[in-house]
Image 1: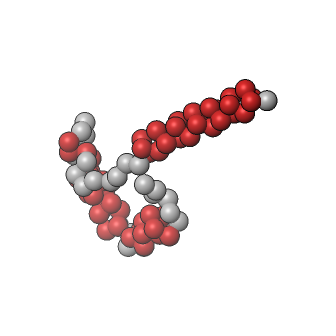
Image 2 (image 1 turned 90 degrees about the vertical axis):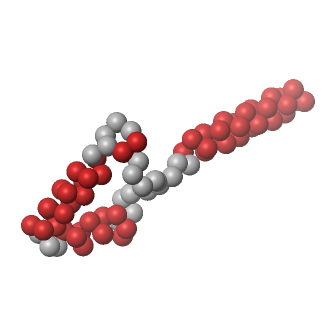
Length: 77
């Protein structure tokens, strides 16, 4: 019985260690101008221009974007 309890405890410790090590990988943060430092330096400008053009053509899209990102919680960190 003692060996079984010890094995169960070791399994629990290993599972907790694995969970904690993965949690640090997921805890990323958003940063301004991220893509300019990576492989696509014009990405933010392209998205900004496309969004501006879409909203210029259909003024209801501004509210739709706000709802998509905030009300519906589509984007998560």
